[in-house]
Image (cartoon, rainbow, N blue to C red; front, side, top):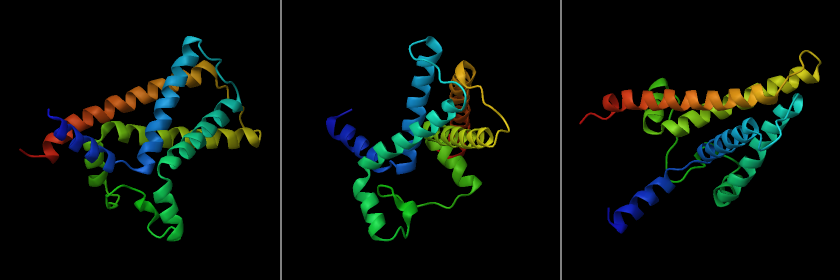
Amino acid sequence: MSGHDRATRVRAWWEARTFIGDVTLGFTAVTVVNSAMMLTGLDEPKVGTFAYVHLLGRLGIVTVVVGLFYLDELRDALARGFRGAGRLRRQRRPRRATVDAMVRSAARAPVESAARVFTAAVAATSVVTVALAWVDVRTPAGGDELYGALVIVAGLLLVATGAASWRWRRRLDPA
């Protein structure tokens, strides 16, 4: 591959990045690595409600860090009053959320699709768990079980979206 072709591919990849996609990829990567560190004893596993608050804090930190890379686009969105705020993307038009669009997206970007589902599931679970602990309905355990589950869920999602990508790519992109 020549240098020009490589540069063109890198430019196309960069222009296809989205704010939400980058946040979810960053959160998933940091969470899986940190969970593996906790399972191997390199870091102390968080327990109780703090484990879930820690996950939500990590999502907030990753969002702010990624937001720094999108500062110009975020500033433009603020100036527009967030009209078309879903367009925080580099040269891509927003698509309608249909089952077909989701399947196409998962087939073309299986890792990003797995990261989006993982981040949404972890965030929703954390919010519900913290809320239930706050009203004294349930006290979460956290610890090794939580971090093991996070690694397993991320792996299963990656395998599922990869398999779906392999299966659907032939249907969606006829030769």
